[in-house]
Length: 542
Ligand code: GLA
Image 1 (cartoon, rainbow, N blue to C red):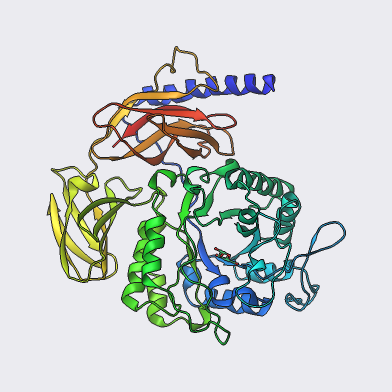
Image 2 (spheres, rainbow, N blue to C red):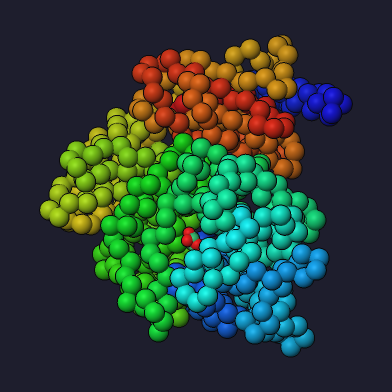
């Protein structure tokens, strides 16, 4: 252990020397922004098929995803949710599935072998997702349809089950919390253990498993779920289901999704300090294309998920989408906001009257913002976007574009106003000049001063122009895998940040933090999270 630490210290010292030279050599050279994993896009079986899911349904949906234009737009995951497994294991504890539900799909396939459906999905150029529970029993104990089933959770079998999923070829796993909740388990502890079991499965099989946490916002997952268990990327649900399943031709088929519940899920999903470097608040599967919302409301729904940078998982039956719905789900300019490379979430920057809200999501392009004008009242409103409020320089000119109507609104100084109908929203991309950031170097470390593995990096005089600061972190991580650090602002609980490999050079990632003190008096610290820290050479605060 000591040797490992010494080696890590030595390699960090070398890294520091490299990074210091690069930064001192050319202080103005832009440092490369390191790409972070983006929010996943795809489809899930739950909302429209509940636990009636079968191989035939999954094949039909995968084909529809592929032929409808959704795949081309970026939707890639075909996720099999609850109901695929009824709690049977063999004498060695391996999951056994029902042969009739999962018959062979390919000519030489065997019944009851999930590899068969995975291959079908992969052959369309798509990725496959699977589902389990963190506890012993899953949500099947209180099924929406059909009889209850015990023991459909993975507790006691984490490594075995996740390795099995990866061997079958799955690319994504959603882990629910019905069993964990029933047993009063601690989700922060449990999901960290699960993340390590996922990492074990990845190592054993060489297959990457995307990690989706589903505990409905219980025990504030945004405080512990980002990169939990050193996951390179993950998502966590922040609220309950928008809608109970609506399965055509079955009981409850008259259910409808509610606009108010969709808005409530948006509100509960806003935790910008936790969303960065590949970790995302998950607002739930979208209900666009399901019974309930009007076209206008669906467009607002899509705008909210995009500005929040939420995973975009469609819950509707893909074989029945109308052309209008498909157009909405595949609008490239809207999707680009969700999938922006900085991986950040919107913050609310103004609410001049109750329900009249302006949201701004910083984009990776310098001076780029997505801006949502959300009118939750019944009356039409003129809403004013001020450059200074979205962090753009006062003197600079701003260009604004409406991404739904695909029209340029023009070039403006300082501010512009937009008419927003009652119960509607306007989604814009605004480009201007960023307010110049202030750069800080870490205190107590640097060339000539020893770099201490395991020490905090501290910046004690940070200020920003607004409550929400954007912090661009310049760092070096020569490893192939990400390194991690905990960020604390004014000694408050921090967020775990991932620092992907920078290779031989240095790079930046960007996070948002809430500065609760005015002026240059906020104290930031980055502490090691379990293992080696990246070498942090500077932060730029806007
Ligand atoms: C929970 C989840 C849903 C779905 C169901 C399955 O309610 O939040 O998304 O997975 O379980 O039973």
